[in-house]
Image (cartoon, rainbow, N blue to C red; front, side):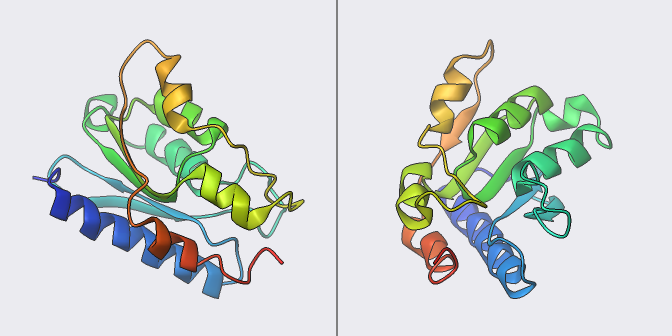
Length: 160
């Protein structure tokens, strides 16, 4: 059963490794994985900005669309998203509306903003996902930042 500190580290490292694969594929270096209550990886998603320049193509948002249209709500309520960077306000909203139990993230939005600056392809919000979730009517557990420096390394040299 997923949920221990070691589980979180291993699964977050998997999300960070996927963000490196995204970078190597020529897309923004973000990735997320959806994990079921038994610790099994159900879905993986890289950032989807390319090829259409979809500014809403964040890995978490796209993963939540895929999950909410293909998996039962009862299962989603017990799932965790592991993501290489903290979900932005849009992605936190998608996670909330999808009904997930937990978010585990690597790099904070604040740290990401320090790296990206005001890059036109990623004008990062400095708004913690905890603030977004706190405005909701149900609790979403948040763990992070975690392995922040590992997650940040994937972004070195990307944002100019």
